[in-house]
Length: 345
Length: 210
Image (tube, rainbow over all chains, first blue to last red; front, side, top):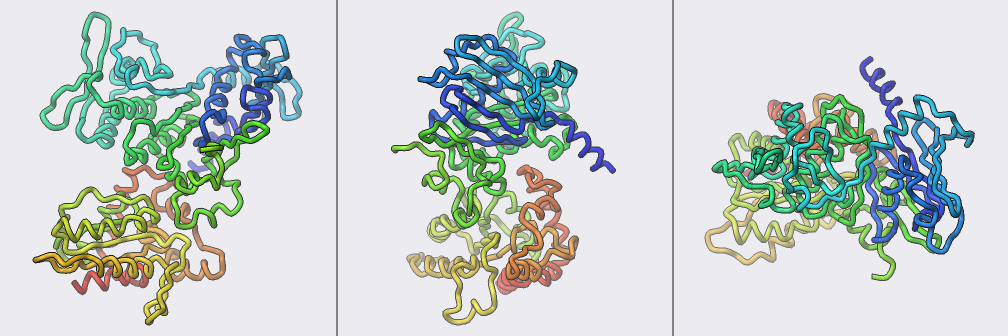
């Protein structure tokens, strides 16, 4: 009975099933398939970041002009079509010489009036966040602002942590426990007020209880803490896009990174009752890719072709099992057999 | 006894240590080893030479236990034990052959006996061992018959779902559940040997003979 109830509830969970691009920057004619969790691998300049950027444009469609986003050398209509799990679509369009417009359409392309459902989808799109974390920004002390959220570069982490401690102590304790598992030399996040109205954080060492200021922590520790914090938020964004979450971390920590991202995407597996967050991560790391061998449906290969970038689910690759056999997925990807590698290196 | 354990994933190590301790009837002592880890079967295959060399030259380890998953590879058969019968696609045969070759190349070291090495083959994955005695359908015979008919009775993800409640268990969950199941299995290792006579049975017989 519980399973049925959960399944019914799950059907109501908003998710983007795919995004189609036409004449949008390097994405001349491409469709990006998405699941609750998606890992995109591909060469530099293949449009991974561009695809993520498109997802944040819905609420600011009129801020972008056609000339700024159209594929270089083209003067055609630019379209981004967001295909929702409920079969409706959100269409973003830019005609030559104009700014953009956004409409909701049904599965047949018929425009829909703005109702509660569409308003919820807009609100959902407003919650799309792209993170490209920067250790220096993560470590920054910040003025106390109650509603501040984690910035794309990781700034405001101290404010988010402070709020988590004040409003969800249990979660904050769980975050401390998880941090201790990732980086065993630390056991607690502490705070200080360097000057009036500001906040800074420190990590306490397990041995000796020394307090290490954020600015003195290693880059890897700061990146790990920012990702962990996202995973333990009671109200995370509707969609989290993380660029290169493996960056700056020891390969052995990547399994923990995977767990943190799965905590966001599959909260029910971690005893969480909140809604799933749709997660998209990009990577160039064969080690990180290795972790998805048992879930090729979660991996998308971005491949540069003469026609522009194409996205393909790894699980759609013919003879994948026969090709992988006794090899690491990352190694096989590196060879180029699966695509998604630079053309001439 | 100083025993090193090398498996596909560090999350399984404590569970393996519990089972080995029970087979030996005494607590095992961890050899002074770096924190050995492999990334799946390709990692074990690629690192076994270095691990054996390290144990031989740089530690006082007396034994090495290697546990790998069979995945979709051919499962060991009695015929493989005949002279010239080894099938190198079988992971047990491959590792036995490779380990014998490596040990033959090691230079003798004063005061050091050859390290005892034994291999466990979890068919098709260690989660199948964890289901022993719980799910009557999970057994080596069922898997082998499934491989022959090209209709495996369950997948690795099915086993994960059954053991952890999800095909995407966290590290912590894998460790905790592994320890819990190993403690349960330790009460009756004969059951595990009966259900997995090749992959676990050969390991159990070898360890008991030490």
